Amino acid sequence: MRASCWIAAVVCFLAALPQAVGATAIYALTKAGSVYRSADGARSWQQLPIPGVDPLAYEGTLAVDPQNPSNLYVYLRYTPPVVGKGSPSGPPATVANTLFRSVDGGQSWNRTDLASNILVKRLVVDPASPNVLYAVTGANLYRSTDSGATFTQASLTTAVTVITPDLNRAGTLYASGLDNNRAPTLSKSTDSGNSWTAVTGPRLGAGAVTVRDVAVDPKNANTLYAAVMAGCPAGVTNCQLLKSTDGAKTWTNAGVQGDFYSVVFDPAGTIYAAGYTSTVGKQSGHISRSTDGGKTWTSIETGLPAYAVHAYPDPNTSSTVYAGVEASSGFSSPSPATILVSTNSGTTWTPVNIAAQTAPNDSLLAAEITSGVAAAAPPPPPSGSVTRTVSAASQQDGPVAAESIVMATGLRLATGPATADYDQPPMTLGGTTVNVTDSAGVSRPAPLFGVSATQVVYQMPPGTAPGAATVTITAGDGLVATTQVQVAAVAPGLYALNSAGLAKGYVLRSSNGNFFVEDVFDIDPTGAIVARPITISNGDQVTLVLYGTGFRAAGGDWSATAGGINAPILFAGPQGIQPGLDQVTLMLPPELAAGGVQSVPVVLTASGQLANTVYVTVQ
Image (tube, rainbow, N blue to C red; front, side, top):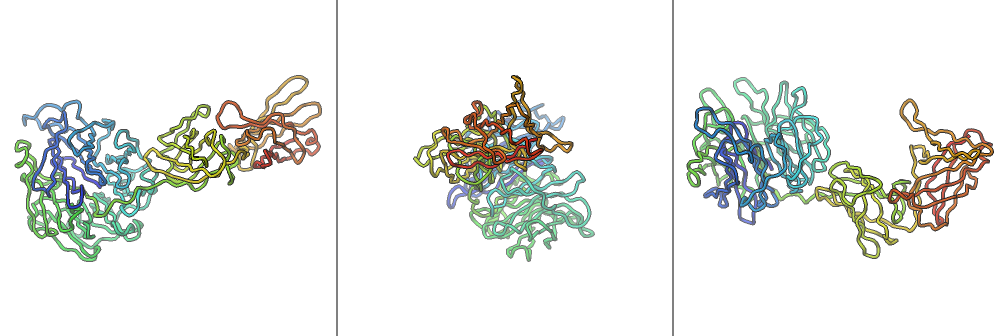
């Protein structure tokens, strides 16, 4: 759901949103920074004052949570008044370039932490995850996962002017803009904006294209429409409505004339493309309507003003449509008829003047509508998913041990990457938490070492009972992933440094009463980790220290071999500093020297359970 008011626009009209069955709320944002609400189809209006906002000149945008219309967001940017017009000289410091939020339908407002240098042109609330809010600047996209309390810049390399949720698939949305060469781009996210993949730009023919709006068919995710500015047939300018039927891979002309600013769907699937037409001596607001999926179109101009318009279907009643004027379209200022209402799908229109009913001195003019909520129920909230849980050391399937370090892989497990202090891992990292309910029904939080959208590394909490455990991973945006994990008392795993299984550890050499620490690896000229041969010589005691997890509870029941030869274990248990990290210290048999330079397997057994095999090179 999107609405914006920018440049010379004087009123931003945000569409109808469902409050309850049969009820509709409509919100309007004026040039003076005032918010108005109508609960009766635009017949009457209530002003919703924002504290500290005086009747100055503002640019702004307003967004409403489609799941809960009591949650409102208003962004205001002060616009310097024209010299000599008698306006105040400047804005209150508390409202210049500020984002406000209301959780009670505009009765009270709180400022959010959006940086003052971020100049927002559009706000979009994720229809499936109401705590996710997007702020479009025209150059970048910013994303909040905590209802606007904090924002981070999205990982997009292109300018962003339009962002559109797909109501068919939770967490899926499109971002459109321009690349560095001013060519149109379209990117797609399937994880609520965590990551993005370029698809294709809505472009037809040569020349630059400005994308004004993108809409996804709420009943068919592969069908998209784009309202764009582009080259048009002779005598007509800026008149492209493009259509894709293959999920934005290719685009064709939708077969309708007009300079379109928005394209939206009503509850019955009717499409409204709104803007204006321009011919010699005539400029008119224009809406094209299709009731057959874009095959044929009906032109609507009667009753519309001589200014570009936007259409916004009521999501509860398919025959009710609202229209507002695009005041930044280059036309002269329209009359104070701020909103037009049609109850017969656009056949006739009734103008509504907010100013006359509420604040005549506010000089409300017309409304800009850039898009609307498609007439469909919001998709169910997306969820995270765990595809695999393994020992972080062995990365092999099977049970994991209590107190061991575990790695879960999947989707939507975190809102972004974060790494903890391994010696003091927190219970919350980057907003992500992990909770483990064991076979005895006891729930415990898990310490976290690292998180990303596709991976979480954590410690199975101490005290977790053997048997089936339920692990719940909750990301910072509220998405939840749940999985079943088998927990054992002992499940040994050893860490490796590379894909060849080179053991992670070091050598401690005792020679003639002196002790030396040696690495088991080198870095080659390409930057790859390779084995460094360990010299096995008569008279030296060569001890190998390896790191792993999951075997501290073996209680002395362990053994090891190196190159198939018994390797006495001097110590096995907790490493002592990093939670969950174990180590084993073993003697390398002198007999290994007889084989020359060779890679030998090291095998650890704990309580009868084999760890993954790791390798060292000896000579």
